[in-house]
View (cartoon, rainbow, N blue to C red):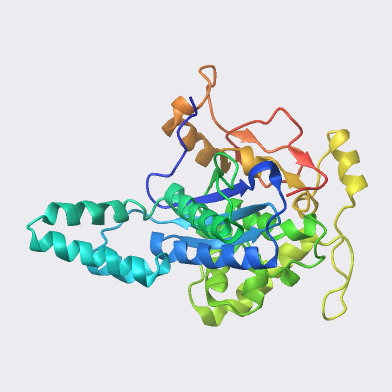
Amino acid sequence: MRSSRIKADGLGYYHCMSRVVDRRMILGDVEREKFRELMRGAETFCGVRVLTYAILSNHFHILAEVPDRQDVSEADIVVRLPAIYERRVIFEMQSQWTLWRKQGLESLVQADLERLRARMFDVSEFVKTVKQRFSQWYNRREGRVGTLWEDRFKSVMIEPPSHAQRVRQGVGALATMAAYIDLNAVRAGIVSDPKDYRWCGYGEAVAGRKKAREGLSAIFGVENQERWRAVAARYRLMVYAAGTESGLTESGAALRPGLSVEQVEQIVKERGELPLQGVLRCRVRYFSDGVAIGSKEFVDEVFWKHRDNFGPKRTDGARPLRFAAWGGLCAARDLRLTPIAASGG
C-alpha cells in the first residue's frame, strides 16, 4: 500500500516530475510544444501557477505554486472551461445542465460543478490533468492505447520563500529548485545556455512570454511585469553561476567557472563538499526523492504533520543535505544511495 502524497494545508510549492513509460524518448519538438500548451491550459483551469518547468525527451519537471482552495462560482467555472475543453464538449456540458434544471434536477448540476471544483487548487489534480490530456492527444495521434507515463508522478514539497531569502538575492529552497529545473537541458548536454532551450521556464521567459516571466518573478516576490529586467538579471546570475563550466558573458566578462564531471565524481567519492554553483549542474536525487526541502524548521514541521508517512523509529524529520554548501537546506529523507550524480535529469 503506497503512502498518501504529502501536501501543504494551504498555499504550497511543489517540484513535480514524471517520466514516459519505459523511459522512451518520444517527446520531440512537436510533442514538447503540445505538452506546454496543455500545461498552460491546466494551469489556468486548476488555478495554480507554474513558476518554472523543463520538458525533456522522456520526462518533465514542473515547479508549481498551489494556492489555498477558494470558492469558485458557476460563472467562473464556465470561464475556465475553455482552458482544457473543446467548445463542443463545453456546449454539451452546458446543454446537459440546462436540461437537468428544466427537469428539476438541480442536484445533478451541483454535483457536476463540485466535480469540476475538486480539480482546482490541488497539485495532484493539476498534474493528473496535464498527463491525461497529453496522453489522450498523443494516443489519438499515434493510434495507440494504454498508459503513456510511469505509474505515479513524484512530488517534493518546497519551503515557501521568505522575505529574508528574497532580500538575499533569492537564495533559498524555491529559487535553488527553480535554477536546478531550468538547468535540465544543460545537464543533458542539449544546450550550453538554458536561455537557448525553448521548453523550459527560463528560455520561455527570455523569449518574452508573459506567463513564464510571471512565474519566475513570483519566486522573488515581484508581481509587476515592469520589474522583469531586474528579476532576469538576478536569476540569470544564479543560473549561469550554477550551470556554466566555462565561457564569457554577453559583455565579454569571464563567467564564474563550474566544475567538470570528473571533478564532481572525485569530490563525491571523497565525501567532500561541492559549491552550490557546481552541484546544480549535477543530478540531485534530493530534489526528486527528498519528500520535502527547506530549512530544518520547515522540514520538521512537515514531518510531524505527516508522521504516518515515515518509519516508526524516526524521531525527527530534517536531514541536512550532503556533499554541497546548501546554505542550511534539509530534506525529509536521508537517501542511502549517493544523492549527487555527475549528470542526468
